Image (cartoon, each protein chain N blue to C red):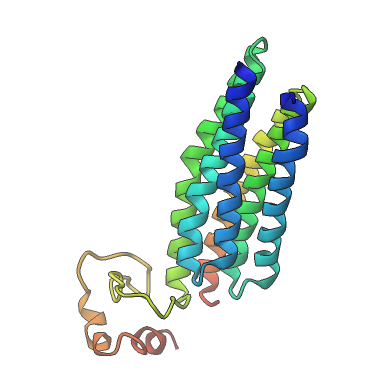
Length: 139
Length: 90
């Protein structure tokens, strides 16, 4: 009985990881790739670790270790994704040409990389041309 | 069909196909941040492979390796993003 439940969990986890791998290959844009990847891969790895935690019930240390890895994975994956997405936006990684809206245009201070909630006054002059504005500030 | 052979013949091939697809993105990746997230996903799938293998073999020692890999994945992504931001170009 427990084997069937573990098999179902492993199958869902493997399919989630497969979907994440297909997504990182097929998505047109870095931001879309990141958005697909992190959630699905965390779900897949978490389900596998949950399986391991239930498969070794007589060893409490293994169950604790698997749950600790699960907790650590769930805790750190969004932080890492946020940091790498912020870096990608700051170094002007190009976006997909079908992108409709970019709420962060001009919000980042180019000098010290702080985020403002409104467009800071030194960026207002370059805001007329959002395509070429940040590049000219950089060079 | 027992759980061991199910993992050996169904789950691990699916994970191997996923690893191959991520390797394609790791070699293709137009920018460096693509490669960084491909590496991160590669290590996450590696954790899953280690866990599935330890379930299939019934040896719980491999879970320790998965813990160290999870730590290294987080640390490497943080370090990559910090230094790429310091470098300031693609």
